[in-house]
Image: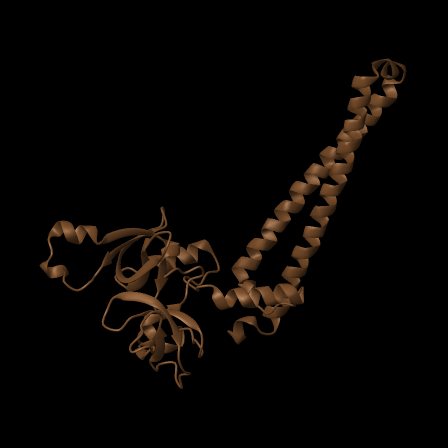
Amino acid sequence: MSSLLGGGGVASAGADVAGLLDKAKELDQLRKDQDEVAMEINKIHKKIISSPEMVDKSVDAIVAKLRLLYVQAKELAESEASTSNALVGLLDGVLQSGVSAAPRKKIEVGEQKKKRMKSDTDTPRFSSASMRSQLDQAANLKGEQVAARVKSDDEKDEWFVVKVLHFDKETKEFEVLDEEPGDDEESTAQKFERKYKLPMSYIIPFPKKGDPSSAQDFGQGRQVLAVYPGTTALYRATVASHRKRKSDDYHLLFDDDEEDGNLPERAVPFYRVVALPEGHRQ
């Protein structure tokens, strides 16, 4: 990462952002100028409608002024189109260079705090620089097990471990199969009923079992969504203690899992623990 963003990369990113700001200011000023010209044109139009006898006396001057204003309006509109195209080009360049991952100067302390708070609660379902990369990541999940919100009502959301059968890039929908134990003894019709078509927002990829570094590290006290031991269902839980290594199991306290008035700690592999979705109901 440092090789991509170091040295000239950061300088280039800074230049791109500075160019974006300059063009945005230029576009804003052009629109203000257009508004002023439009107001002047409207004033003359109203004058023509309300006092036609005055227009007859100075028709040449009014026509000349109107023509000048319309020429100005045309030139400003052309400048706006040119500046907008330049902005689009700069934005494309920013996206292609990956500048979104580069360090940036904070604009406002308040905004920065909001972003930090949001990042603590948001579920990183698909890392994304563009919609195309999100769709590619989703398509690559075929055959993988993921966490899926298969049922939802006014009171609670139900999440299960499912297998991805197919991802449609056009509709942006997953077709998944609930592989709950006992499928072999059920009829074909019942198996078919265990298939679901779900939007991308209802799917959370699990961390790679063989790559602990790909997983988020949830600290003690953090609420997560995790597979309850011995089942394929996911429930809200709280991390009970710190782990020494990212490959270690989590020790979790599941909500509503009381035994003799206490919440027992349950060991859950790191690759069966994901961030708690915002607004989760249980």
